[in-house]
Length: 385
Ligand SMILES: *Cc1c(COP(=O)(O)O)cnc(C)c1O
Image 1 (cartoon, helix red, strand yellow):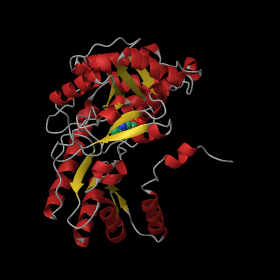
Image 2 (tube, helix red, strand yellow; image 1 turned 90 degrees about the horizontal axis):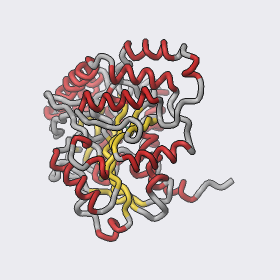
Image 3 (cartoon, rainbow, N blue to C red; image 1 turned 180 degrees about the vertical axis):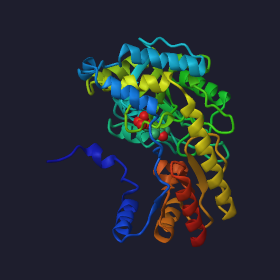
Image 4 (tube, rainbow, N blue to C red; image 1 turned 120 degrees about the vertical axis):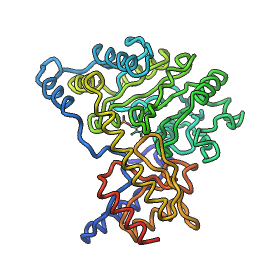
């Protein structure tokens, strides 16, 4: 058999070599600490688990789910947007249930991008913004993200010939992997730019609930004109420690919501309705988890950034996300430094280049690791330098 040509265009899995080395070490009984994974280490809150236990016994939940999400789920998403951001959305036309935001990102491509057309993609970001395009024969333009532009993806420098063939633009703040945050002014410029060039603007707000030092990440839907050109993606994954549950939603521009829903109705059959009921409890039940988790990650952030500073590795103190984005020391590139840490310290970090060209010169350290393991990892890194 022969796979499609587009399969060969997918980038090689950047962690393959690291995974191989890790497995070899573990087989030898070596204790490897991973600071590479973007997956909360704490469990889903009990109120959500209890809601699931009840919902799973409801026979109506055992049948095919609604394609667009149960009405009560979409209502809850709209209510959550009202509670959290004071944004009013029509649950019927401006909200769509997603089986995780990754699914939504990937399915936007068949809805919006034809062969040879461009998507404007953050210079470093969630890999599916790029690979989702490859799978439909689309092209990516990586928008530069640098320390100088505070890692706010520079769409204004996009060449005219790319813009003429561009259909979508992804941005995401608080940002994975750089942990940068956006200003209102940046959102406003992105909205104006999308309008001027007839682009669908997608704001991936996966870390909306993880803010530090009193910072609460905003929604782009709070900005004037956003729903004319933009949709926003929210997920229970990082907000409520629910990565395994696969439940999220898209909201905003009704035309885009409809197009994405049409693609999805030809591919999947919605989210298990009991999971939607559990997500309703997560979004509308007690919200203490949000502060508890932000406090926990903030403490780990301080632990990591201060310890790194002590060994000469420079990292800004982030205002959100579960990552610290650190400069690699002089004389190394991202992959080289990540490899050295694995070889010599038995510590896994993510090389910045795994997220795109703007990631060169950086590593990403995940805070979704128990404190004692973080401390041990930093100690080991110190001893190898
Ligand atoms: C984790 C993550 C996602 C995927 O979230 P799911 O809802 O679990 O699919 C999407 N975007 C970013 C930036 C992420 O970090």
